[in-house]
Image (cartoon, rainbow, N blue to C red; front, side, top):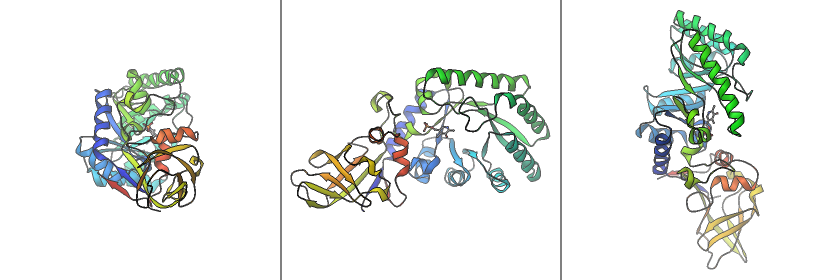
Length: 344
Ligand SMILES: *Cc1c(COP(=O)(O)O)cnc(C)c1O
């Protein structure tokens, strides 16, 4: 196996600029879950910080702490998957912004903050229809009343009110937004200061101005990953930042064997379905084995030549994903940690 994932940090910077310009005056929260979608948290966060990004969406505590270590104390790091008292205390000590999607967690965070003598930065999540996590609308009023009480005692400050939407159909998203608006009304009616509002991820933040509010949580578009079935990269103004390359191991008649396979995270179901970039032009990738892939030959094919599986100058991760019924993010996050990342 000789695959390498090249990550173009200048392309990341350009995508971030495009996203920020589009959503302004809303701010960008760069989502860096799953090791920054497989691109490597440390280098992605370092570059984004240098470019002025101040909000990061980490998902889990381990990722959040990696972000904090790179981005420093002034960065805002949002974590929305905390499990257990130890995680909560660690999150409070690290001044993380904590997403709270159920009443039990709300109580646990408030109790731990009181214990530590800290004020939690809470972002209360309302379930606007995805039913993944989030306080149900019928329980929202009670949760807001609790928040007001915890705020009065200094246990927490209500920094944000947020939700996550499907971004699959406009009608469904509109309904989610109505639920979200009612939740915001309840917060105002409880006399709480207006929180930061964040609802949209990549697709809605780009296509739907009224979904941007104060902050948008964007991952995919910053990494140059377009939505499946959606507009092209050029329409969106984004470009892939990652390029998966491997080199030729040997040439066997009409077939060329390349050093990338399923153990590198390349789905074997891509075999026979995609064209890859070769020195002789686009060629079909015929099969994907565990450690090697077989590509249709080209004139003068020779060991050591580079083949581009996806990314800059080749098909995109989403192009690949669409041939096997998944999404571009899935291709990106599946690339194994054993594949070296090289930054340029
Ligand atoms: C992953 C995620 C995002 C970012 O989604 P993209 O489509 O990659 O921009 C935003 N918010 C939440 C809660 C997420 O889990």
